[in-house]
Length: 543
Image (cartoon, rainbow, N blue to C red):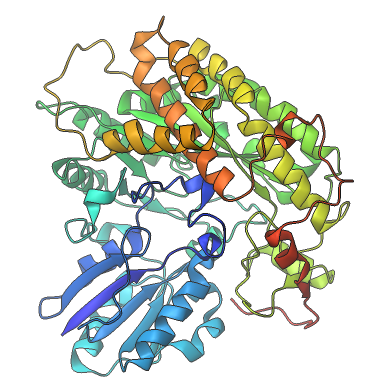
């Protein structure tokens, strides 16, 4: 028996000018964030079942497959594509199984498009599930539960097309203790954070190192939420990283900004090699933070804490949201001023969206503000738009404001101002004073950085060559952070290229002092946005 596990492409990429999610910055056929789900499921497959992995981000789905069973994972941005794949394989007589976050949160969406579905986490029921598969007696529905992460196997990255990955991925925990009202992670994985043992994590890191990775993403929902557990793991990583003749590995992860209150935690993260934090800043408005219950960001100066992180050697890539009920048309300019005060090269910017099964979804539904695209019914609105009516602006004004905010933030002049802050503040990596290492042959990332991104940027706008030279020259007096600055520049350029291809970066808008709400702007995305209609069904969609 053969099982094909598929990670669909993101539907946010479908139908745009670019086949890319702008902030994921996948360029030149390389993938920033691989699918841990299909690699982890593959590790649970018993002997007697051959397994193959396919990720549409870097691979083409074959017109036919010799697999007996097709397994498809889906989060909200993959949902519609997952259904397309499922329908196509079922039409060819294949048995199709679906699972993943969005299947678990909205199983009725997939019920007519599969032969079997897994709701919840697979580890606790894997033995029964695969025994049924081998016997040809798959049930229509399997209900998983919260897994003990200590029993979760190491992902089969050896089966994954890892040669096209920019960074390796390890997951040390699932779940988050916070209660942000727009977050669907806690609806799927829960508020009780569950952890792997440090030895498991180090084993997975070593496997990735052996595959040639020198950059690894710790794909936790909130890496330092449990400080006691995080400190133990950090010490294990410190002891491993660069020891026994190994070259150092840099790590990236997601941590709440309040971790900067703990100097020892900051120091341990840096010593372990965590050099980038993808952090949900969201907004500087206290009313909006209270509205969404963003507890980790309340009660202290966000700018000074971000600066503290960079001084400790941990770069930040913040995420910003506009569209809270307290937001007005002036909020876009406020967010711009706030973001420009941060030492951050790139930032993720988007509208507030109400994912299925979240408190915000229920609230918007009860108020009659929730919108639905009848052709999708997936809960995923057109890229850079929301799925509910904002309180103090129209949907069109929200979209125009976001397009302006992104254009202002990603204009080269704005980037160079923020880069100067990084160069001035950033502490070098912990291995900067250890002298040259033996060095390993770089993964395709080196070629990707040096050629594809720069070539695409200069092709987009020849003047970017001068920006690149100026950006790299800004750090010449600090050679110990040269590689870190290069990463910031390349990350910025990759996102800028994708935003331009997606129509969200406009150099003319980047020079405007305020959003052009009065110019009657329209594009294909806004036309799709305007097709969404209020949901009139009063009942809550079941998780």
